[in-house]
Image (cartoon, rainbow, N blue to C red; front, side, top):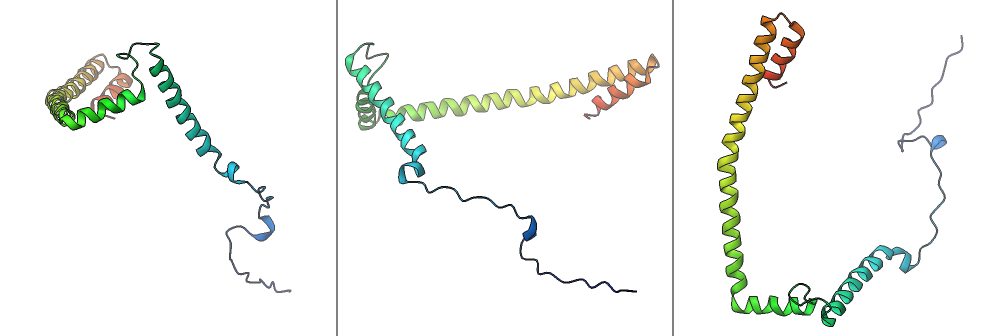
Length: 148
């Protein structure tokens, strides 16, 4: 009888060398190709602001409805210098907090009550199905009443 000799191969990779996928290297990219997305994105933003400034400066539309970017920056710096921006942010933050608190105080109990009523409705349907000896519907209703 011939004995079988197994050779111990060192495992250095997850994929055996015979089945490794060989790919061709990617072609060399120049600087523009490497940064194409950044260049196009930056150009798009610059073009957007340039067109906005041109339309705003031409006063095709009223300054009230379409101020130019420079008008916006001027108004922003004026609000910061006067301290009006901080005051307005404080009022807005307080209104947001009060609204969020009121929503939570009202919505959480209503949600819990709705879940309880929903569960009770499924229980009532399950009992009605049992009275009518509809075991399949009763089983489904009891599962729904249990929250499954």
